[in-house]
Structures are given as C-alpha cells and as structure tokens.
Amino acid sequence: MNAIDLFSGAGGLSIALEESGFRILMANEINSRFAETHRYNFPNVPLIEKDINDISTNDLTSVLGNNEVDLIVGGPPCQGFSVFGKRRFINTQEYDPHQDPRNFLVYQYIRLVKEIRPKFFFMENVKGFTNLDKGLFVEEVKKQFQELGYNDIWCEIICAADYGVPQERYRMFMIGNRIGVKFEKPEPTHFPIGSGKYPEYTTVGDAIMDLVGKENEIPNHIPLEHKPLVAERYGYVKEGCKLNVDDLPPHLAVATRKDSKTGKVSNYSHVYKRLDRNKPSTTMVPGHNAFPIHPTLNRTLTAREAARIQTFPDTHIFFGTRQEQCIQVGNAVPTKMAEPFLKKIRDYLEMHKEGKL
View 1 (spheres, rainbow, N blue to C red):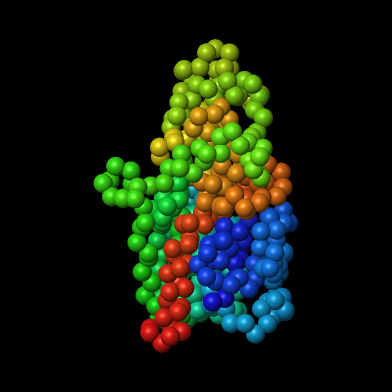
View 2 (cartoon, rainbow, N blue to C red):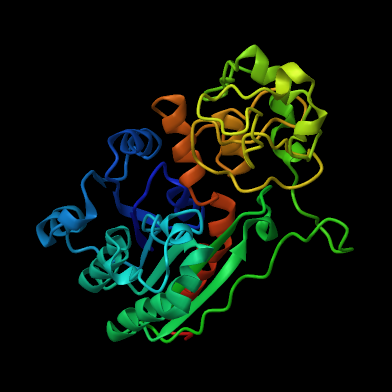
C-alpha cells in the first residue's frame, strides 16, 4: 500500500505509516531544518522541500510516476485554529476563518487530494479545528472533500493516552475515503488510571525515568543549563503540581523579567509545571522553554525525554538547535496515537483489494 506524507515535519506520521505497513512514496516539508531531520531518518523517502502552495503537477509526476496512491496523510499547520492562537484575542463576529491566511494550507491539502485521488485521506489537527466558526469551518472542509467523491467522512477528537501514549493530548482526526467504507475507529488499548480497566494509561515514569543518569549519552538528551536561580525555583515545584509563588522564599519570588508588572515571578502554565511519574504527561507544547519540569530533577525535559513522551524511538534523531528540536518534537503527531488508525485504514484497503467490501 502506497502513502504520501504532507507537512511531514520530523516524521511522526511517517514512522506510523511504516509501522502500519505502508510504503511512503513522497513526503513534503517546507522547513529546511525539519527536512534535514526527515531525510536523515527516512533516507529512502523522496522529500519535496518546498511550500505546498508551489507543488505542481510536474513535481508530483516526477516523484510518483505511475504509482497509485492509497493514502494521503498530513496535518496542515494549525495556528488559525488553535485555542492558543489569534482567535482568543479577537471579536469572533469580525473574524472570518476562510480569510485567515494561516488556514489556506488546509485548502492546499484538499487540492493535492483532488489531484492525486487517493483511496483514503487522513488529516489531523488541533481539537479547536472542530469548533472554529461555531463548527461551520469543519463542515465546509468536509463538504469540499465530499464534492471530490469522498462521501464517507469520519471525524472525532481523540485522546492519545487511550492508545498507549504517555500523554493526555487531544487531536482531531478526520478520515475520508471514496471506496464506500464506513470507518469505525479502533478500540482504545489503554484506560484511565483507577477506572478498573486494564491496561491502564502509560505514565511519564514508564516513558522516561530510565533516562536519568544517561544525560549527554543519548542523542538529543542534552539538559538545558538553567540559571541557578531558575533551577532553585524549580525545586519548590512539587511533583505533579504548578509552582505556588507563595511557597517561594523572598529571593526566588522576585521577577527576573524586566517587563514584569507585579515584581513577582509569574507562574506560566508550562514553564513552572512538574510532571508526575505516575500519570500521563500534559500536552507537549513546542518551544524553547515550554516543556514541563522533570518529575524528579530540577530542570525541564530534554528533547529526547519529550520525544519519548511523543513515542518517538530513540533511534530517531532530531537536528537543529535545542529550540528547533523541541518544536519538531512538540509539533509531531505521537506515532503510537496515529498507528492504530493507519492500521485500520490498511485493513480496509486490503479488504477492498480482495473484493470483501
């Protein structure tokens, strides 16, 4: 079965595709550093390093040849949809998501689906995608796919922890096909801690605690050298909790940022949050200092620890500065989250090939 990975980033979905038995005919990524990571980890996958707006029919033909494409996957960048983005700060009555240039990449994804005509498409995005414009935008996207013949479209918000990822991360998955399949999502493989169902959610401890003491020995496992004041402040953050500023001694409570309005340190939700070894992580947010604090050490997570929580294997190497590595890790779809869905798509394709659908 042949697949294409658009907006491939560091390759989270590419790993899931290969683990699900697909052959990746082509990937696409605009960021040169992310493309470097993808090329290193998938040396046999042709990668078009350019803006998806500029991918032409000739580009596709030169890479794909006469190969039939069974599946296109991808997550168009989601700044226009994210609840952390522009829509928090605007009057929604005046904001037209169809005119937000950050949303245009969704239409480019649709354009390539139209041109390539895969049997299935798999699109992922932030959960805010589904309620943007009071739900009208996602319905418009579905309508455009249906006009291309993809009449069977399934769309739902999925929790990564339900599929063995040590992270309570929620993403929208949209899966459509033109071969008459009524997609049914795979059953969860893991269950909330204390629910009485097993196996329980994978925890942060399961994922990263064996890396303690192996700093600088494993690729991308390089701790950030925090200022002594910051590291000391981390020491007052209890496991599984946010910083309580009132617990700080006076010398640690004083703000170090020049733009502080209160004169006291601010409790940023991700910067001063310590993970709990016995629970799944919160969402891995990309950025230089946005990863949370290690469960037992007074430092933020390394890119490798965050990659473990995103279910990347240790053999997957990330290139670039620490910040670039963290963005690549945080932007990715957890591989183990996507895998059951891609395997289900492959099963449907096999049944269709054998005439059982």
